[in-house]
Amino acid sequence: MNRQQALAVIWKRLLIVLLGMLVIITLIILFGPTFKVGPLVFLIGNVGGYVSAQRSLASLTDNEVIGLASSWHGLIVPPLVGGILSLVLYVLFISKLIGGDVFPSFESDANARQDFSALIYQHAKGGLEDYAKLCFWAFVAGFNQNYAVDLINAVRNK
Image (cartoon, rainbow, N blue to C red):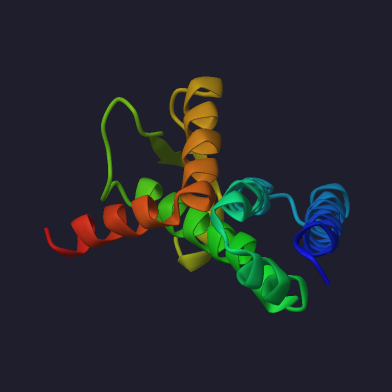
């Protein structure tokens, strides 16, 4: 297998992974529970990881590309890690451990129970503006996973 054939295999597999995630998240949004922000944050983080994986292909050697073409794990893990990191950032935003003008701000639903499930019933204070910020940071968490980890480490070191 040469580099072009391997890239064709990788692009097809990445597209399958992306479409699979879109279908799963769409089903959750349409038929799942009333909370939808968490699954959307996870999906946006996955898309960021997908875009990052696509962009990194150009910097790989021929042998690395050929090796990656034979591995599903190497194609699935980066988007999944991006989705997980985006959810971690979402929790950091809700907990107010990270804040400021460039980050979204959330408030509790007054009617939600005051237990662990209250985490999923948060509303953006600024409405659409804060949800847009959340979408941006979810994408960044997937796209630049090192930056998301640096944010988490900064909170840990406080």
